[in-house]
Amino acid sequence: DLFIIKGDNKIHITHDSNGNPLGRIYDINKDRMGNYWICSKGGGVFKMTYSDGNYSIISYRHDENNANSLSSNNAYCSVEDKHGNIWVATYDGGVNIMVKKSDGTFDFVNNKNGMKDYPQNSYHKVRSLTIDKEGSVWAGTTDGLIVMSYENNEAKISKATEQPEPSKRLQCNDIICLKCDANGTIWIGTNGGGLSHCTGKDENGFYAFETLGSKDGLPSDEIKSLTFDNTGDVWFATD
Image (cartoon, rainbow, N blue to C red):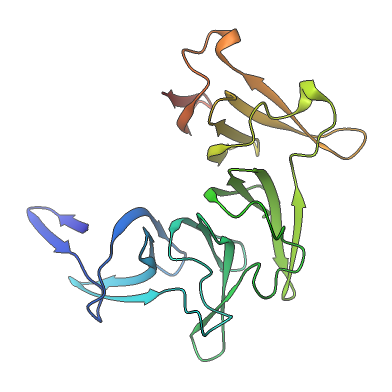
């Protein structure tokens, strides 16, 4: 369910404008136009416009008969890129890009249609997304990290977990959370491999990482969430 609280007033929303249930809401993201994008596990993606106490909610769901629909209804989170495209993480359908058409509707670009380079048998369970300073979208999956961009109707995809040097790898490819700090550093919370940050690409062109874990004094190697304060310090929660 969704609650909107303004002063002493509370609005409780359970369904979209067509009567579809919102389901289990995992994330809400506001775009540059003031629209709210609601990601729901089992319910897909909802676009909410809200003004002066009135709202409308449109749903976007997977349609087996439409190759350009959302790849899965298990939507976990969304981000907006520099072009205004909405990227959606789904837990069993990979990453989707919502591309706006001239009539105002959206096509979903994903591994079932326009993402020819997206891995077909892995990186489909996506929990988190973040955008780096260059505008690339990083996706945290149960199989590791992928770095993506969408330019001129083409999706470019590279894996960030192919580092051959063990000391520079992520210590676990099961990614729980992912954020970019004010300096452009990508921080990664893993499910058993501690807290990592990307140090960039090494001399061979592979992404490299440094990791803090229980051996460094952390109470657990399972990182559940992370954020940053105004001084640049990293705050994170462990299991």
